[in-house]
Length: 247
Image (cartoon, rainbow, N blue to C red; front, side):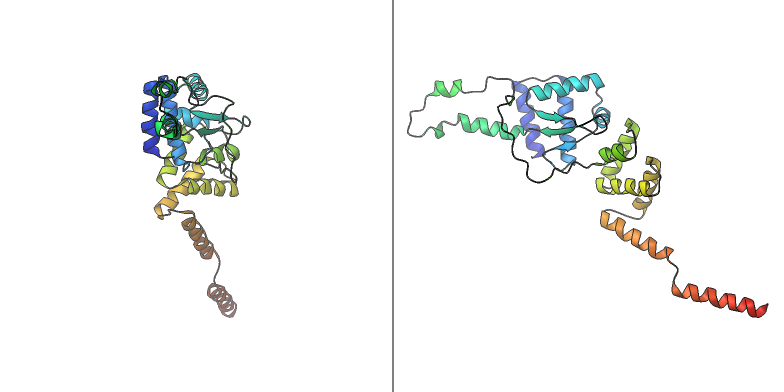
């Protein structure tokens, strides 16, 4: 999916088929998260994070989500209460391209073009996709749905709007992989709270960490510093011998 093209296609679509303001806000919010997820076919976002970014109330959010589903803009599924829902955004660019192909009279070879027939084929329905009439594309490989917000909810605890906002800011400042790595370190040290993660992230930022490779290199360096060298062991032995002689 192309971010700019999808925006233009969405703007064109809502001129023909109006949406509620809440549905428009939700669509743009989901587009942002899909972009951050590197345009994965299916991505997971906690409801608390969406509410924080969109500014919608919980009831408005649910109505807007249902509206987008019914009109074919998105697909949505939930697994269980303790897991963030999964979303899939239908490409509006693909829909408009298919419409143009269907309406192109050049495709009517060996037949006389009937303009009234072409006009009658123009889309009259409000929904972009008719439910139960689209064959799902076969999923290739395993969908990677791991993100920092979901990882926090699954491993550290309840995600409130304040923590969700901080996680988002750190993901934008460093990267999502680095934020998740800080959470793993917090769990290893039995410190399952975000204040500890944030302390780790601040230290990494001050040390110019920009990738997981930088994190691994830094950890190796720290382990080497913690290991006593042979020379220090020898110095300690000689110091003990000197003490015995002086005694």
